[in-house]
Image (cartoon, rainbow, N blue to C red):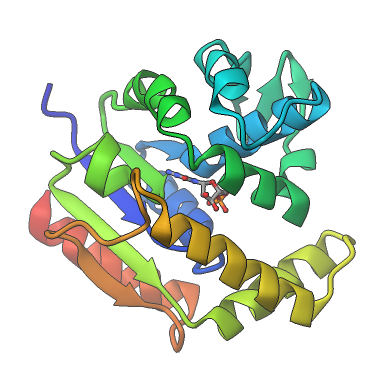
Length: 218
Ligand code: C5P
């Protein structure tokens, strides 16, 4: 069971998702976008009218969540929700449902099943600390809230979605505060994580930096 695992944790808007995809392509490894899982759960719960702050209602849903990742698309009960889960509201809902310990443990096995040969790149908040603590290479990717809001703004605009920069900065701060302060699996670097600050780096530079570590470790 010594499948090579590379974890990428950090707050939203640091480029984790893009980095994970590039690395998975380059290495030919599987990819796990764990944030998408919490986003789908938030979406499913909202649609069912569940209280996002009520673990009693959410944990059973998490345990039986009809989610599939297929060829880069995310399916909920067979419906393609890849775009629906990318809105700011869905991010906020994800962060609320993700705060419950019961919900998180219900999703553990599902995530761990992604660790298959030839290897896995996993992106999220607690990949290196909780889900794959044995991973030989852990990256913690950070950047200033302002630059992260700017990147998210451009992403949303490119997709033709509505975006408001001051609102994005406020949302990012709120979501960060909740992710960092929650009692279970708070957002923080693993003790053995390599810290990378992407504030002043392009995605190509971040990729080179991480590939250096990949060559060193695997
Ligand atoms: O990474 P992404 O922005 O898609 O994550 C959405 C939310 O899901 C985060 O704000 C966080 O609260 C939650 N999350 C988490 N643990 C993960 C991945 C995401 O709690 N491993």
